[in-house]
Each structure stands twice: as C-alpha cells, then as structure tokens.
Length: 172
Image 1 (tube, rainbow, N blue to C red):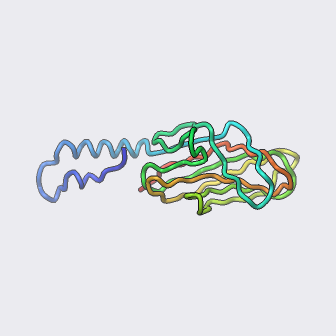
Image 2: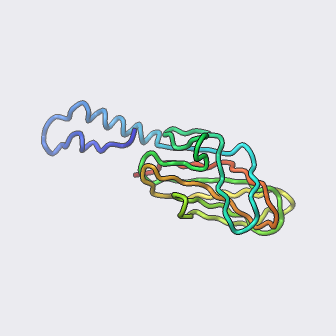
C-alpha cells in the first residue's frame, strides 16, 4: 500500500475530531515504512558476454524476494519496475569468468536509455573470476524501470553471472 498523506484525511487546523480513517492512514503509512517496496533478483546461470565496448543487458530468471510486483520471471526479465514513485537504492553484483586482460564493467540503465552507477575494474589476478558490485540511487516514477548491463574487454567472450540485482525504496 503506498504512502498517503494524513492531511488529506483530516486537517487538524479545522478543530474537528479526527475520523477513524485518519488512524487507519497513519497505521498503513507506518507499515509501509517498516516494509517498503523492495525487490532482489538473480540469474541462476552464466551468460556469455561478447568482448568489446558494447554493454549486454543481464536477464534475471529468479527472485530472492519481491514485495511490490516489481519483477517478472516471464516477460521483461531484465527489468525491475517501480510500482511506487520515489527514490530507490539500486544494487548489483556480477561475477566474471577468469581472464587476465582488459577490464570488467557493470552499470545500471534507466528506461533503456540513461546509464548510471557505472564501475570498471581490472580483472582479478591468478586466473580466478572477478566480482563487481555497484550501487546508486535513482528517483523513479511509478512504471519506470532499471536494468543492469555488463561488459568487458577480455578479447574473447566471457561468462558473466548476475549474482544479485536489487532495488529498495528509500524515500519519496
């Protein structure tokens, strides 16, 4: 249930007794703050990402949790869509197969066009995989979505696993 301004139910300046619906609104608002909209998804399998400067959008075939209908495992599986307008904390972690050249990158994509929260790092040494985590905040209106993109410049394709992609409502 979205936040409702209690002033829309009862304005204490009028000097009247608060109706029962005012108390219900305050209770519902507190419950909303205790369990705000949040979603965490992942992909149970690695995806082969082509080397180069082009980002690959990462799909998520599984959910850790989704308390606001923000993700579908059937259609548009790469997206987490805000159902409640506000400021969201976006988090993503991906692991890259071992490789020793180039760099690894991870970024968010807002509405399929605007990149934000991009990070790039060198590969891990010693022939082990590389893990990247990025985080950023974004103001979203209801219906807007965010995706995660991965890229690398290994020189050959690399398997990348989306370990977690999450969005958590932090304020309106």
